[in-house]
Amino acid sequence: MFANLEETRHVLVGQSPRTRQVLRLIEKLGKCRWPALLLGETGTGKEVVARAIHNISPSGPFVVVDCSSMVGPLMESELFGHVKGAFTGAATTKIGLIEAANNGTAFLDEIGELPLDLQAKLLRVLQDKEFRPVGSLSSRRSDFRIIAATNRDLAKEVEKGTFRRDLYFRLNVINIRLSALRERKEDIPALIQHFLTQVGGNYTVTAEALEVMLSYDWPGNVRELENCVQHMVAVNSGPLLHVADLPSSLQNHLIQKKSQYLTATAFAGPGPHPGVVDSPESFSPRGAAVPQPVPGVIPLMELERRAILNALEYTRGDRAVAAHLLGIGRTTLYRKLKEYHLAN
Image (cartoon, rainbow, N blue to C red; front, side, top):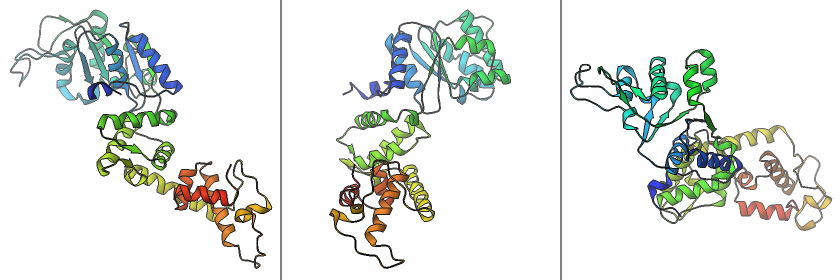
């Protein structure tokens, strides 16, 4: 499916409308050298997109500048380099990341974390293609394509005065907004298969586990999904990966849904389920006559039927999750639905 492991790390996976739109923009940006600004939550794949843009026309190196990891007085040295003796500990001349990106692509990750003084110096590099290493009396040149990324709202940061307006407009020539995984859940099956291909082996996620993964909101986005797949493979020798193999975050998600369901059903009676039509025969399997109940006593079959209806209503028809909430297997739930004439 993929040529090698390194290649698979730098492709955008999915066929949702949002993903297809990003893929079209990657194709266009890869053929030019316009600055690009990638916007999105942490873990949405901003570096993957940046590398994909670079790989369309891979001339020169791809250099990652992690702005959030550069702290203190050495930040300028990391970006622009320094000459020997520029400061205490500068025993040799060092090339900075900006110079290393010459003729290639500089990916400035979390650009919103860059202090104002370095923002001004970066702006000069973008305008004049020139910079001065720390301690140097002469300028050097570096010509590169810049792709910046952030999980912040830079427009709001500009209004607050924490991000330079001129730098913002210099970077924001073309922007790509990457959707959170919860907004494109139709891509999850393809992403799971992609990550399983990366780890190798003949692994398959069961339908029940997939349903749980589809019902989860993934606050860590694609990165969290990748970690989840790796966890499942690590704890199970395969080939089938089950609900029990899911990491604690998804197990807690299931427990929370079950707790909410039990709380809801403790104070509410059965509600109508979309597509389910009650009939006199619905109260017993196979249309058998219902015995007259003793006043104040609800027949067991009726209690079971109500529990199934409540679970389906609570999960909005999601049978896999409903089965988990009821503590039964999905096959058992399907059989019960047929017995009580509740199957659509």
